[in-house]
Image (cartoon, rainbow, N blue to C red; front, side):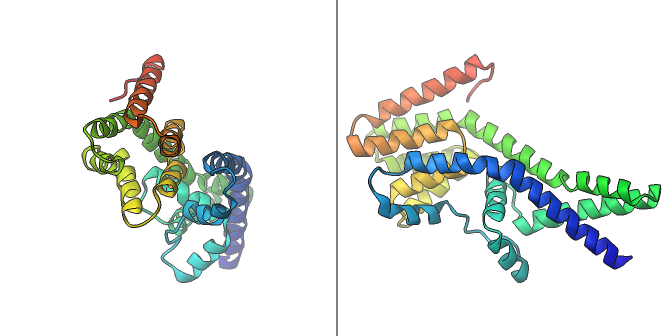
Length: 257
């Protein structure tokens, strides 16, 4: 009985990961590639490998060494899951997420199998239950990104005021990191820390845009990088961007803080 459950568990896990790749990861890879192309400096081919390393997750994928190595070899699948966990603000590893999925699936299979005496019903229940952790992950990710959109105009305003007061752009980032609550504050803190510890600001900004997959964050990064290349009044540009974001929230029936 034990080895049969083990085979069923492995088969169900393989099916779920395959479906996740086919219907989630593969569809989002084109968006990630398009973002990297838009943010990549024209004619500077030599920066591509370095940029790709920045966009890749560096977090441990599992606390179990063997599983961590296995997930590391899964490449895009484990990388996408790690990005989703980061964007959802969940303090867990990819290995923990997959373990939760497997436990949900196996628990549902055993329970339904014992109740109905049908392996088919148990397998169906297991397949459905294995999606529960991923559904929760998606819910938390969307909730955090929505909160980010609501707070983002306030952070942009704060940086713009710092620039008009004569402070450097990086000082404005530090102020946003300290004064704006999560999730915006923690994202700006990571952005500030990365450039403060030696990462070039353009690359830190691109990594910020990759971590926060909303159009307003991309506009913000594009505005800052363009200003660094061509010059201009960045404070005024940020003020206009904050106003545009607030107007969109108003037109959609939402209010930005």
